[in-house]
Length: 426
Image (cartoon, rainbow, N blue to C red):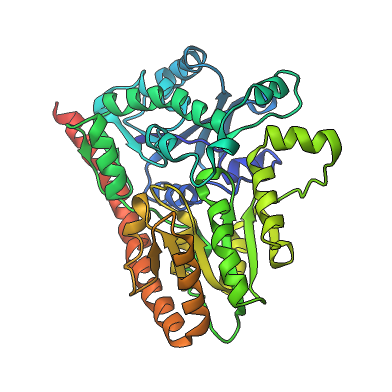
């Protein structure tokens, strides 16, 4: 069987082949790639890029790769059409609905042989993109628009919401067209059904990156006590809300230290006119910087930047607690990696995250806006080693069942076989 994937990153092995730094995103794709390759099925992987130097067809470790220009839907349709005609895949697997390139390809494929895996859903995420950011900070002002027009920044959360809404129609088109969906969580399944009530839901959990199956486990004797690991990328990840909770934690436990993967806070020391402009047209980083200064948290936070797989694994194993503070999320790979590593975890009770933790047994869940509850739960773990050990073992066991590599590999292959056989019978 020939399977064609559409993904939104340049896969790590292709990036290395091209002499590029591999993406730290989409870690679950690496495990799935190994599963399909080892099954003996033929795999073709497509992605898009804005870098013209990367466009082309490649063969790497038995996999055929295509990189096509990221453009508008008609242009991407024109790029995908000859690939489909040449490769003639038996099954097309679209990873993610949230990008226009998904609709560009889905509009060309036979719906009866097309599967889409839900990653994020911008049609729903758009309603949560402000998170806990005040409207006065999030809104897209005339000054934001002017700054963007003259190339001097002007990024706003309001503009991000508009971008989500603009992409949502392509997402809805995709979900209404395909016949098979893997939602990843019951939240993802349910949201997909709202757009396509007759869609066939095929179950399959993620396969994590290889190092998270190496047997290493969180150990109370080797961790950095009162350390927290969390994520800072875009507003939906809720880093601003995490800071509101962190102020309470630091008041009660002053030696708390937070390690942050993702974006680095630039700590821009603006004054005069530049500061006035940023105050009137803030971006998310400026707002975060203001919160850090307001709560005097700079000495309690280390921004690590984007981490490799091994760096992520090592930092997790050293951390006392992992916190996921998202405003909305279908699935958090970072939370899954923390739990399978045995790191006691606290997460906002949103989207699919509420399915990842059994509250009070293998971690804590808290209402997204009640950051004081997040603070209380983190402090409970700090202060109670028996509770931390219980969460560590129970969380690992929960995640080990969820991310069982052998079972999930078979489920992935079963999805393809189901689609292939059903199409043969039509």
